[in-house]
Length: 526
Image (cartoon, rainbow, N blue to C red; front, top):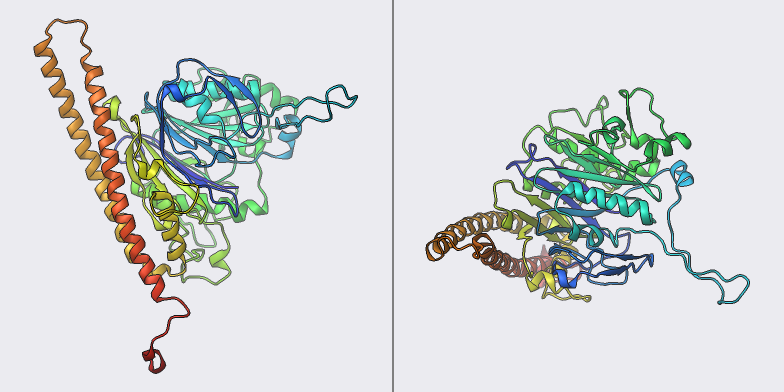
């Protein structure tokens, strides 16, 4: 499995934003080149066919513009992965999860069944398409919704109509709410709103640990689900609840898995994220309430301090720093340092943290903090989402290795620096701190200029066209601001191009000096 997710409610974040963030990690032994693109309404398909499952779906004729971070290769479909639309709805899809055998027996996955035989043969069988999956979800949902809640409802309708061939967690947010959706078998689903004062951590496991059926089938304020979830659970004896409040159950126990492999691959990541955000608790002693192998680490909790984007970037690139489990560390033993799967792993394709800011006007409200490649060797940088085009340095990633784009440059830096972690760490840390600081300054400057552009446009057009009903001042200002946002994105990309190239030079120089076949005459006397 792959991917790690952290979600930050608006009252838990440092500036009142909702923040959704996820590492998009490829499967073991595979490395998927990534890019960053804007999709115009004219480029959105009206009839959609999935590459992997062959499911075909007619789509509405009124999509909006949106920005995504998909794969470069189309061999497994679009795989939009993370995106935000012009209505400031954001999505990240998907966090791969797993359901247990009881669920799969009750509601099997909807898998592609290839055609068999030739037409006219006795045993001929037409192809039967599969359901929707990670390849499809953002493309089918994001262009058609104006709020996060609308996104949950649309996704639920698609799951119930077409089914799915895999278990996934899907994040949908706007300026007010973050919703987390988990698929349950082939056609069922649940969704929970992240409490505003909490963060949630999801490490490739079905994570929601409390669900209020009364709310889901009543006011639907904090919980949503399939229309027949109660009947489905009762018919197949799925609820294992012993001590929940009336009307509540624990989906993790009802639908999820808890295996020895989870304790190696999944639970340690949730443990480390919560250890960092709630550090006053006991996480390390023999008496600790939660250990790296605990199955009951909470899905969400209130942090001890407001969570920043730097916290998110650190956590989603972390490798158990400060513990005996750090593969680059000196604590513990050789065994403990490779006992658990780190968060910042070699096969991360990208990390995107999507920040929807309540204090910014709608036109420049959403910022996507993007990094490509293995997290410990790079940093997330901000790019405005509401644009018509994206910088070539991130947009035009090549299928083959090239230093001309951000993805491959970061991959090269990571591969070189990994073997010489401490010797190259100062240069990497300096780059990361400088890039994030430049990004914050750039966003603040662009926001200020956007506010000034709005004020100037409003004043100018009011003077020239006082009383004219055919002048849409807001629309004219928005068009100009979108152009300015694209210029800001180009500035950030050019900064990255310059400084990533310098970092690659520095890391290559250091690593070259440390090659095992290096030799100088003075070596004989050292």
